[in-house]
Length: 317
Image 1 (spheres, one colour):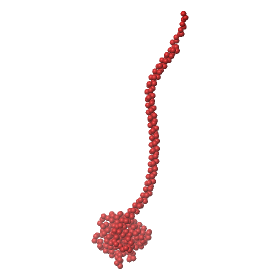
Image 2 (cartoon, rainbow, N blue to C red):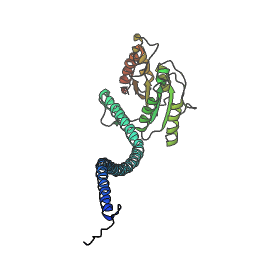
Image 3 (cartoon, helix red, strand yellow):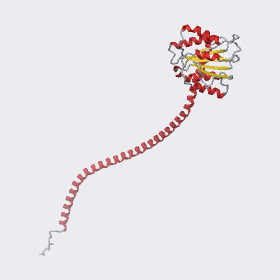
Image 4 (cartoon, rainbow, N blue to C red):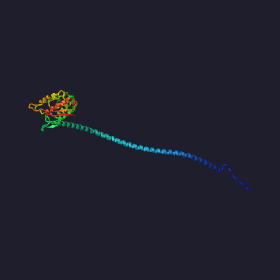
């Protein structure tokens, strides 16, 4: 019988290695499967982190865009503000330049209103005049010589600027005369001379300046000044006397007739004609207007002006 030959068996044959490899591969697969489960959780967390990061990035980009937009708007507003500031400055300059014109216009308006008031009161107080006589604001302007008798007391000193304005107005309504002069109410000349000033532009201005700067005191009684003015009138001098005051001291009610009679006698020449017209301006709103002397002045001057061809004007600011 033929003996069968057998192969020698090896412990680490190829088949064994195959089995071992397969086993090892299975173990690896199991490990991989187990590891993959863990990784899925990590990936999910990473995904959320990535999404959050991307969202934050988008938000940041939007914030940057919004910031740039706001910056541009701010620059635009700033430019507009600068433009407005420049416009305001230009307007302020225009207003400032016009302000002087407005103030001048207001002064002129006030002056015209005062003049209108002055003329209105003069017209109300004017008696009937001859149609041949020229009147300005109710005052007859027919004289060749003008004399001012001014109360220079303290109360008048407080409104002296207004007094000078009225004197200037009266000088201007006499466009052409032979001479001017001025006394205070005590008969003291306001100029360096007692003679009439010739009617020139320089002497007119000089008279106004002398009156403006006069600082002498008085007794607030114009009678002596009126008498002095009347006694200085020559027969050929057709004269108007303007008395300015606001008060009359030391003159009781019983003296009205005596005083007016004396003034009328001094104002009458040898032929029985009147030498001068006597007008009076009474400041009814001066610091002395509430005193009894203010009423005495108004009453006395109304009598004197009426009897001597003149007009009494009570004026206020």
